[in-house]
Image (cartoon, rainbow, N blue to C red):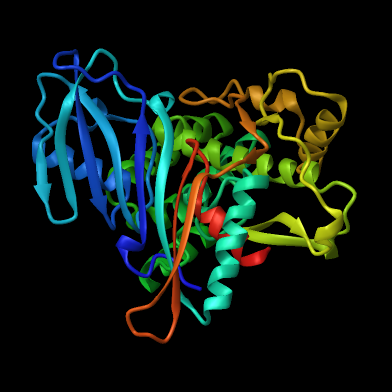
Length: 388
């Protein structure tokens, strides 16, 4: 079974509650893109329309691989109209407030799963999709949330919590995409091997923010100097690093909560980035997902939790030799560890599933359409269908 064989096989459209009128302080644009990330799209629009990127407000990042629709706002005197190949931005109207995550009510998905060997298997996939829609699935963060993770199991934000800004910056300079070209890999290995010898690695950081941070470290590589380097990074990037680590901790907590008491060999797991998390058990007849609840992310201050959940919440921190008070982190200036509630289970709504032959006639394909609340992942539904 394959997903995302073509961009048309993975379509998502953002649905919003932002009131749109004929006048307002902000212009609302419908943004369609194909095969590029949301941030890449915004950078192109910023350059082409001569609108500062900081003025383009959006609700969430959408997948690179697929055709996606979302909404962005700019101050009403700006013009963000654009159309070229894989990117189109068209005016929808006006609003009194800028776009943001809270305006997203849900995302509507249309997926095509291809190369299914038989009609029987295709119909079984449809049945699994409807079953998951009825009983729900664990609401894990999926691969997209760990985009800043690179090719290691180490976390920039965790290094900061451990009081080690030097190792955090080392990750900033050396983490690379698993499919990075050989020259990028060689650069990463060289910087990692010679970290601390600023003169040696300086030629590999000739421009932009890396050059600025390295220039600061050449002048002061004391602990306070490393913290200054960390605080030179943008608040958005630091927020991504923090979200990545908090999402990992939350996933660990959710798996422990939903499947407490089960042996590891009984668990059916899906991969999320570099880790695996359970979504079911092999002994299906004797397993039911617990009732949905709200689970807070890890931070210095969190909402009250029932005793069993709090015990598991603390247990995840102890696995990493961390404690709640460490998340206050006063040295960090441009971002912070906030605690947010997230539902333990997600229920795909308006599920429809159809089977039809592939154009080649050799395989079957399944077309799925459904909606998910903001922050939940259609890719996780497909992974769950595969494993359950």
